[in-house]
Length: 461
Ligand code: C2O
Ligand code: CU
Image (cartoon, rainbow, N blue to C red; front, side):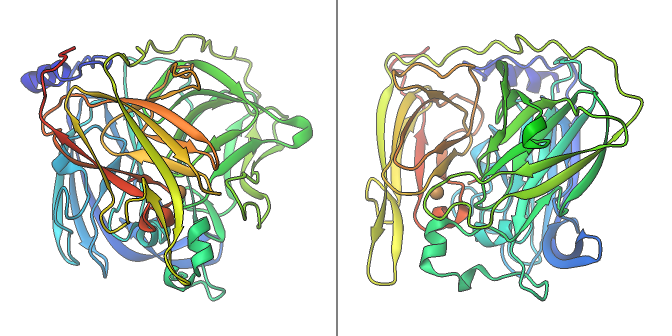
């Protein structure tokens, strides 16, 4: 383990070094299967699950740990597991036909990799993703850094999602939806938090809680509001996709696009015995947004006695270096929606037809600046596999607070720029995907590949 830890820290050029006190091995069995899940009292659904529930188990590990997952596919369809946001070797990325063969029904596959970063990650299939994720296949992977101490022991992992059900409770097939629905991105008609409708949790009044939130819905954005509009409580955002950010920021609402994560501190105000409701507001992600209004997602029942502890001090959280942009390669991506014929429409990047997709070439050690111009009427949460990036502002400066991300929203009619450095690590070369995390959009053509080759030794940093 010692040698492995050393190798790991040597390979993390450009990223915060991991100090591996003691690396352990975390071993998990993950079985994908159809199972009955109770999403609200008296409401059972026959869903697609990991280990029999929605979401799958929260996998907990420490940074530097080795994770071994024995995956068994007992679905009626092939599947794989993708580890969203984890900087792992390409062979473990879970993309069928690229990093591994599909795992057929009855088959199995062992995922085995080291967790180089602290943060909330998640896992989901990468075969027929819109359908399989929509049917309930997702779970959280929480990687803790024991040396990170923000002084809030009270932590909740919240997996946000939705599911489409027919009136008789059966799963709605995505096949029946029309072209317009796919262009927008199909949202489920039942909203879930940790797999339950209108979840009820208890919370001690006035006691700070750390919420680790992931949006696992296949199309829906979430915008959370805590408390009544007249009596709102703020979210103190301390991190996102790739762990803690530079410093904390207070926000009135918490917006989480599909695939993204948020790390936020909340303090439920109120008397013991009262309730605080978390509402999902209507988020404008383009034409057709908000057709089903706002939803109550979660109720916190406050218990006493009210906590009198001082709110934690969250000023400086982590030092993050901005990615050096000198010598970076510029990559331009234009996202369009193309009408092929009367019945077929596809999303394209740089007009590449969806069967081939766009391939970008890169080499290890290279930095690229991506300029993603969204020329469509719908927003697209862009996700890059296997690497973190930093979002840049209009002047090309990194957005503050600095943060590591793997998914960024590209709003309709807007342009987003980001800087990505392809860091060296064992097995990093390969064909890494990037795609919209509205999974109907990804399947409708909004995806591409980074073909990452070996080091060029042009400008070794
Ligand atoms: Cu979570 Cu290819 O994505
Ligand atoms: Cu999209």
